[in-house]
Length: 309
Ligand code: FEC
Image (cartoon, rainbow, N blue to C red; front, side):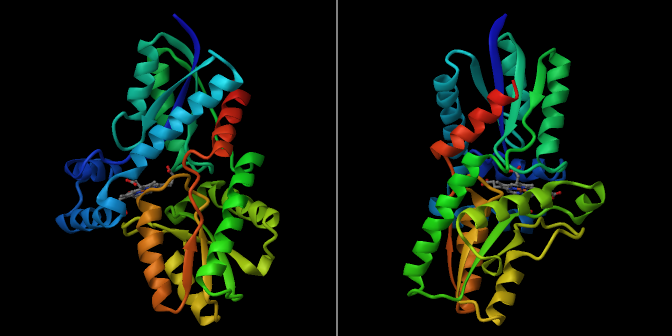
Protein backbone atom coordinates (compact mmCIF):
# COMPACT_ATOMS: atom_id res chain seq x y z
CA UNK A 1 0.00 0.00 0.00
CA UNK A 2 1.15 3.47 -0.96
CA UNK A 3 -0.17 6.39 1.06
CA UNK A 4 0.75 8.95 -1.58
CA UNK A 5 -1.89 10.49 -3.80
CA UNK A 6 -1.24 9.68 -7.44
CA UNK A 7 -1.41 12.53 -9.94
CA UNK A 8 -2.14 11.38 -13.47
CA UNK A 9 -0.83 14.15 -15.71
CA UNK A 10 -2.42 13.72 -19.14
CA UNK A 11 -1.28 15.21 -22.43
CA UNK A 12 -1.90 14.73 -26.16
CA UNK A 13 1.30 12.78 -26.90
CA UNK A 14 3.54 12.82 -29.94
CA UNK A 15 5.46 10.13 -31.86
CA UNK A 16 8.85 9.05 -30.54
CA UNK A 17 10.40 9.00 -34.00
CA UNK A 18 9.42 9.35 -37.67
CA UNK A 19 8.88 5.56 -37.70
CA UNK A 20 6.08 6.03 -35.19
CA UNK A 21 4.16 8.68 -37.14
CA UNK A 22 1.89 6.23 -38.96
CA UNK A 23 0.87 4.37 -35.78
CA UNK A 24 0.31 7.69 -34.03
CA UNK A 25 -1.86 9.03 -36.86
CA UNK A 26 -3.83 5.77 -36.95
CA UNK A 27 -4.46 6.06 -33.20
CA UNK A 28 -5.71 9.65 -33.58
CA UNK A 29 -8.06 8.38 -36.29
CA UNK A 30 -9.43 5.75 -33.90
CA UNK A 31 -7.79 2.84 -35.68
CA UNK A 32 -8.36 3.98 -39.26
CA UNK A 33 -4.99 4.22 -41.04
CA UNK A 34 -4.36 7.49 -42.93
CA UNK A 35 -4.11 7.47 -46.72
CA UNK A 36 -0.55 7.66 -48.13
CA UNK A 37 -1.20 11.33 -49.06
CA UNK A 38 -2.35 12.19 -45.55
CA UNK A 39 0.69 10.44 -44.10
CA UNK A 40 3.10 12.23 -46.45
CA UNK A 41 1.48 15.51 -45.53
CA UNK A 42 1.95 14.86 -41.81
CA UNK A 43 5.60 13.77 -42.28
CA UNK A 44 6.16 17.00 -44.17
CA UNK A 45 4.73 19.06 -41.32
CA UNK A 46 6.87 17.32 -38.70
CA UNK A 47 9.97 17.71 -40.87
CA UNK A 48 9.26 21.40 -41.36
CA UNK A 49 9.16 22.29 -37.67
CA UNK A 50 12.27 23.18 -35.70
CA UNK A 51 14.80 20.45 -36.34
CA UNK A 52 12.15 17.97 -37.52
CA UNK A 53 11.84 16.59 -34.00
CA UNK A 54 8.93 16.08 -31.64
CA UNK A 55 9.22 18.89 -29.10
CA UNK A 56 5.95 18.00 -27.38
CA UNK A 57 7.53 14.93 -25.73
CA UNK A 58 10.30 16.89 -24.05
CA UNK A 59 7.87 19.65 -23.10
CA UNK A 60 5.38 17.25 -21.53
CA UNK A 61 8.21 15.48 -19.65
CA UNK A 62 9.36 18.88 -18.39
CA UNK A 63 5.86 19.87 -17.30
CA UNK A 64 5.34 16.62 -15.39
CA UNK A 65 8.72 17.02 -13.64
CA UNK A 66 7.97 20.70 -12.96
CA UNK A 67 4.59 19.85 -11.44
CA UNK A 68 6.17 17.15 -9.24
CA UNK A 69 8.74 19.70 -7.97
CA UNK A 70 6.06 22.29 -7.27
CA UNK A 71 3.86 19.78 -5.41
CA UNK A 72 6.91 18.68 -3.37
CA UNK A 73 7.41 22.32 -2.35
CA UNK A 74 3.77 22.90 -1.45
CA UNK A 75 2.99 19.52 0.15
CA UNK A 76 6.20 17.54 0.74
CA UNK A 77 5.85 13.76 0.28
CA UNK A 78 2.13 13.84 -0.45
CA UNK A 79 1.89 13.43 -4.24
CA UNK A 80 3.46 11.21 -6.92
CA UNK A 81 3.07 12.25 -10.58
CA UNK A 82 2.51 9.81 -13.44
CA UNK A 83 2.25 10.57 -17.12
CA UNK A 84 -0.58 9.37 -19.37
CA UNK A 85 -0.78 10.30 -23.06
CA UNK A 86 -3.83 10.28 -25.32
CA UNK A 87 -2.23 9.04 -28.53
CA UNK A 88 1.27 7.74 -27.69
CA UNK A 89 3.11 5.72 -25.06
CA UNK A 90 2.85 5.84 -22.11
CA UNK A 91 -0.90 5.83 -22.80
CA UNK A 92 -3.41 7.10 -20.23
CA UNK A 93 -4.15 3.46 -19.31
CA UNK A 94 -0.41 2.76 -18.84
CA UNK A 95 -0.19 5.64 -16.37
CA UNK A 96 -3.14 4.32 -14.34
CA UNK A 97 -1.66 0.82 -14.39
CA UNK A 98 1.67 2.11 -13.14
CA UNK A 99 -0.07 3.85 -10.24
CA UNK A 100 -1.93 0.65 -9.36
CA UNK A 101 1.31 -1.35 -9.52
CA UNK A 102 2.92 1.14 -7.14
CA UNK A 103 0.09 0.53 -4.68
CA UNK A 104 -1.60 3.91 -5.16
CA UNK A 105 -5.22 3.82 -3.95
CA UNK A 106 -6.25 7.40 -4.45
CA UNK A 107 -5.46 9.62 -7.40
CA UNK A 108 -6.34 12.83 -9.20
CA UNK A 109 -6.18 13.42 -12.93
CA UNK A 110 -5.32 16.69 -14.68
CA UNK A 111 -4.94 17.43 -18.41
CA UNK A 112 -2.30 19.74 -19.88
CA UNK A 113 -5.05 21.73 -21.62
CA UNK A 114 -6.93 24.42 -19.66
CA UNK A 115 -10.36 24.29 -21.33
CA UNK A 116 -12.97 21.55 -21.03
CA UNK A 117 -14.65 19.89 -23.96
CA UNK A 118 -16.37 16.51 -23.99
CA UNK A 119 -14.22 15.74 -27.06
CA UNK A 120 -10.91 16.75 -25.52
CA UNK A 121 -10.52 16.73 -21.73
CA UNK A 122 -13.72 14.69 -21.35
CA UNK A 123 -12.32 11.84 -23.41
CA UNK A 124 -9.04 11.78 -21.45
CA UNK A 125 -11.07 11.55 -18.23
CA UNK A 126 -13.29 8.79 -19.56
CA UNK A 127 -10.33 6.58 -20.42
CA UNK A 128 -8.60 7.19 -17.09
CA UNK A 129 -11.83 6.57 -15.18
CA UNK A 130 -12.45 3.26 -16.93
CA UNK A 131 -8.98 1.93 -16.22
CA UNK A 132 -9.01 3.22 -12.64
CA UNK A 133 -12.29 1.57 -11.77
CA UNK A 134 -11.07 -1.69 -13.32
CA UNK A 135 -7.96 -1.58 -11.11
CA UNK A 136 -9.61 -0.25 -7.96
CA UNK A 137 -7.93 3.16 -7.92
CA UNK A 138 -10.20 5.90 -6.64
CA UNK A 139 -9.92 8.90 -8.96
CA UNK A 140 -11.12 12.49 -9.09
CA UNK A 141 -10.38 14.99 -11.86
CA UNK A 142 -9.57 18.63 -12.45
CA UNK A 143 -11.89 19.44 -15.36
CA UNK A 144 -10.67 22.93 -16.24
CA UNK A 145 -8.48 25.71 -14.93
CA UNK A 146 -8.98 28.29 -17.67
CA UNK A 147 -9.60 31.18 -15.25
CA UNK A 148 -6.92 30.33 -12.65
CA UNK A 149 -5.40 33.73 -11.69
CA UNK A 150 -1.84 32.46 -12.21
CA UNK A 151 -2.64 31.08 -15.66
CA UNK A 152 -4.18 34.44 -16.59
CA UNK A 153 -1.12 36.26 -15.23
CA UNK A 154 1.28 34.07 -17.22
CA UNK A 155 -0.74 34.55 -20.42
CA UNK A 156 -1.07 38.30 -19.85
CA UNK A 157 2.72 38.62 -19.48
CA UNK A 158 3.16 36.76 -22.76
CA UNK A 159 0.67 38.92 -24.61
CA UNK A 160 2.32 42.09 -23.32
CA UNK A 161 5.74 40.79 -24.33
CA UNK A 162 4.39 39.63 -27.71
CA UNK A 163 2.92 43.07 -28.45
CA UNK A 164 6.29 44.68 -27.73
CA UNK A 165 8.02 42.26 -30.11
CA UNK A 166 5.33 42.87 -32.73
CA UNK A 167 5.77 46.61 -32.46
CA UNK A 168 9.53 46.20 -32.99
CA UNK A 169 9.22 43.82 -35.95
CA UNK A 170 6.46 45.83 -37.67
CA UNK A 171 8.16 49.19 -37.29
CA UNK A 172 5.74 50.51 -34.68
CA UNK A 173 2.64 49.58 -36.71
CA UNK A 174 -0.56 50.69 -34.96
CA UNK A 175 -3.08 48.79 -37.11
CA UNK A 176 -2.76 45.79 -34.80
CA UNK A 177 -5.00 42.87 -33.87
CA UNK A 178 -4.56 40.23 -31.16
CA UNK A 179 -5.93 36.85 -32.27
CA UNK A 180 -6.66 34.45 -29.45
CA UNK A 181 -6.97 30.92 -30.81
CA UNK A 182 -7.51 27.28 -29.93
CA UNK A 183 -7.79 23.91 -31.64
CA UNK A 184 -11.05 23.67 -33.55
CA UNK A 185 -13.47 20.82 -32.90
CA UNK A 186 -16.34 19.44 -34.96
CA UNK A 187 -19.34 21.77 -34.93
CA UNK A 188 -21.49 19.05 -33.39
CA UNK A 189 -20.07 19.92 -29.92
CA UNK A 190 -22.47 22.88 -29.96
CA UNK A 191 -25.47 20.57 -29.91
CA UNK A 192 -24.04 18.86 -26.85
CA UNK A 193 -24.04 22.14 -24.90
CA UNK A 194 -20.27 21.86 -24.66
CA UNK A 195 -18.53 24.57 -22.55
CA UNK A 196 -15.37 24.68 -24.74
CA UNK A 197 -16.20 27.82 -26.75
CA UNK A 198 -17.46 29.80 -23.78
CA UNK A 199 -14.43 28.88 -21.65
CA UNK A 200 -12.06 29.95 -24.43
CA UNK A 201 -13.87 33.28 -24.70
CA UNK A 202 -13.71 33.71 -20.93
CA UNK A 203 -9.92 33.26 -20.95
CA UNK A 204 -9.57 35.59 -23.95
CA UNK A 205 -11.68 38.32 -22.34
CA UNK A 206 -9.85 38.07 -19.02
CA UNK A 207 -6.39 38.22 -20.61
CA UNK A 208 -7.38 41.09 -22.92
CA UNK A 209 -8.70 43.00 -19.92
CA UNK A 210 -5.58 42.42 -17.81
CA UNK A 211 -3.29 43.34 -20.71
CA UNK A 212 -5.30 46.52 -21.32
CA UNK A 213 -6.34 45.54 -24.85
CA UNK A 214 -9.45 47.37 -26.09
CA UNK A 215 -12.38 45.24 -27.27
CA UNK A 216 -11.93 46.22 -30.92
CA UNK A 217 -8.25 45.20 -30.88
CA UNK A 218 -8.75 41.51 -30.15
CA UNK A 219 -10.85 38.65 -31.44
CA UNK A 220 -11.07 34.90 -31.11
CA UNK A 221 -10.50 32.52 -34.01
CA UNK A 222 -10.04 28.77 -34.49
CA UNK A 223 -7.04 26.89 -35.83
CA UNK A 224 -5.83 23.39 -36.75
CA UNK A 225 -9.21 21.94 -37.75
CA UNK A 226 -9.04 18.23 -38.54
CA UNK A 227 -8.99 16.91 -42.05
CA UNK A 228 -12.37 15.22 -42.00
CA UNK A 229 -15.57 15.76 -43.98
CA UNK A 230 -17.75 16.97 -41.10
CA UNK A 231 -17.96 20.73 -40.46
CA UNK A 232 -15.52 22.14 -37.89
CA UNK A 233 -15.86 25.28 -35.79
CA UNK A 234 -14.71 28.38 -37.67
CA UNK A 235 -13.58 30.80 -38.81
CA UNK A 236 -10.12 29.33 -39.17
CA UNK A 237 -7.17 31.65 -38.53
CA UNK A 238 -6.27 31.65 -42.24
CA UNK A 239 -9.73 33.00 -43.14
CA UNK A 240 -9.56 35.48 -40.30
CA UNK A 241 -6.21 36.78 -41.57
CA UNK A 242 -7.71 37.36 -45.02
CA UNK A 243 -10.57 39.29 -43.47
CA UNK A 244 -8.19 41.39 -41.36
CA UNK A 245 -6.04 42.15 -44.40
CA UNK A 246 -9.13 43.49 -46.12
CA UNK A 247 -9.83 45.70 -43.12
CA UNK A 248 -6.31 47.15 -43.36
CA UNK A 249 -4.79 45.38 -40.35
CA UNK A 250 -1.00 45.28 -40.74
CA UNK A 251 0.24 43.49 -37.62
CA UNK A 252 -1.17 40.45 -35.80
CA UNK A 253 -0.23 38.83 -32.52
CA UNK A 254 -1.23 35.17 -32.48
CA UNK A 255 -2.12 34.09 -28.94
CA UNK A 256 -2.90 30.33 -28.93
CA UNK A 257 -4.33 30.25 -25.43
CA UNK A 258 -5.85 26.78 -25.90
CA UNK A 259 -2.37 25.22 -25.97
CA UNK A 260 0.33 25.11 -23.31
CA UNK A 261 3.40 23.77 -25.18
CA UNK A 262 5.47 24.24 -28.26
CA UNK A 263 4.28 21.51 -30.63
CA UNK A 264 3.17 20.87 -34.21
CA UNK A 265 -0.05 22.88 -34.05
CA UNK A 266 1.86 25.95 -32.93
CA UNK A 267 5.23 25.51 -34.66
CA UNK A 268 3.70 24.54 -38.01
CA UNK A 269 0.11 25.82 -38.15
CA UNK A 270 0.99 29.24 -36.73
CA UNK A 271 4.74 29.83 -37.14
CA UNK A 272 4.93 28.48 -40.68
CA UNK A 273 1.47 28.34 -42.26
CA UNK A 274 -0.25 31.36 -40.69
CA UNK A 275 2.91 33.47 -40.70
CA UNK A 276 3.50 32.86 -44.42
CA UNK A 277 -0.16 33.50 -45.24
CA UNK A 278 -0.02 36.75 -43.27
CA UNK A 279 3.20 37.85 -44.95
CA UNK A 280 1.70 37.30 -48.38
CA UNK A 281 -1.10 39.66 -47.37
CA UNK A 282 1.23 42.32 -46.06
CA UNK A 283 0.67 41.46 -42.39
CA UNK A 284 3.49 40.99 -39.86
CA UNK A 285 2.63 38.10 -37.54
CA UNK A 286 4.24 37.33 -34.20
CA UNK A 287 3.20 34.67 -31.70
CA UNK A 288 3.16 34.71 -27.91
CA UNK A 289 5.68 32.39 -26.23
CA UNK A 290 4.14 29.14 -25.07
CA UNK A 291 3.88 28.33 -21.35
CA UNK A 292 5.92 25.12 -21.40
CA UNK A 293 7.47 24.96 -17.89
CA UNK A 294 6.59 28.50 -16.81
CA UNK A 295 6.60 28.66 -12.97
CA UNK A 296 3.18 30.34 -12.94
CA UNK A 297 1.78 27.48 -15.04
CA UNK A 298 3.35 24.91 -12.71
CA UNK A 299 1.69 26.71 -9.79
CA UNK A 300 -1.63 26.73 -11.63
CA UNK A 301 -1.44 22.96 -12.04
CA UNK A 302 -0.19 22.29 -8.49
CA UNK A 303 -2.84 24.47 -6.86
CA UNK A 304 -5.57 22.90 -8.99
CA UNK A 305 -4.42 19.41 -7.98
CA UNK A 306 -4.25 20.30 -4.28
CA UNK A 307 -7.68 21.91 -4.40
CA UNK A 308 -9.14 18.74 -5.96
CA UNK A 309 -7.78 16.40 -3.26
O1 FEC B 1 3.21 18.02 -31.66
C1 FEC B 1 2.57 16.97 -31.81
O2 FEC B 1 3.12 15.93 -32.19
C2 FEC B 1 1.12 16.87 -31.50
C3 FEC B 1 0.40 18.14 -31.84
C4 FEC B 1 -1.10 18.08 -31.55
C5 FEC B 1 -1.74 18.65 -30.48
C6 FEC B 1 -3.15 18.45 -30.66
C7 FEC B 1 -4.11 18.91 -29.80
C8 FEC B 1 -5.45 18.75 -29.92
N1 FEC B 1 -6.08 17.99 -30.87
C9 FEC B 1 -7.42 18.06 -30.68
C10 FEC B 1 -8.40 17.44 -31.42
C11 FEC B 1 -8.19 16.74 -32.59
C12 FEC B 1 -9.23 16.11 -33.38
C13 FEC B 1 -8.62 15.54 -34.48
C14 FEC B 1 -7.21 15.82 -34.37
C15 FEC B 1 -6.25 15.41 -35.30
C16 FEC B 1 -4.88 15.62 -35.15
C17 FEC B 1 -3.87 15.15 -36.11
C18 FEC B 1 -2.63 15.56 -35.62
C19 FEC B 1 -2.88 16.25 -34.36
N2 FEC B 1 -4.23 16.26 -34.12
FE1 FEC B 1 -5.15 17.04 -32.48
N3 FEC B 1 -3.35 17.75 -31.83
C20 FEC B 1 -2.12 17.50 -32.39
C21 FEC B 1 -1.89 16.81 -33.57
N4 FEC B 1 -6.98 16.53 -33.23
C22 FEC B 1 -1.26 15.32 -36.22
C23 FEC B 1 -4.17 14.34 -37.37
C24 FEC B 1 -3.93 15.06 -38.62
C25 FEC B 1 -4.70 16.33 -38.73
O3 FEC B 1 -5.95 16.27 -38.83
O4 FEC B 1 -4.02 17.39 -38.68
C26 FEC B 1 -9.31 14.80 -35.64
C27 FEC B 1 -9.35 13.33 -35.37
C28 FEC B 1 -10.11 12.62 -36.46
O5 FEC B 1 -9.58 12.49 -37.58
O6 FEC B 1 -11.26 12.22 -36.17
C29 FEC B 1 -10.70 16.08 -33.00
C30 FEC B 1 -7.68 18.93 -29.53
C31 FEC B 1 -6.46 19.36 -29.06
C32 FEC B 1 -6.19 20.36 -27.90
C33 FEC B 1 -6.48 19.77 -26.56
C34 FEC B 1 -5.49 18.72 -26.17
O7 FEC B 1 -4.27 18.98 -26.11
O8 FEC B 1 -5.98 17.61 -25.90
C35 FEC B 1 -9.05 19.29 -28.97
C36 FEC B 1 -1.09 19.35 -29.33
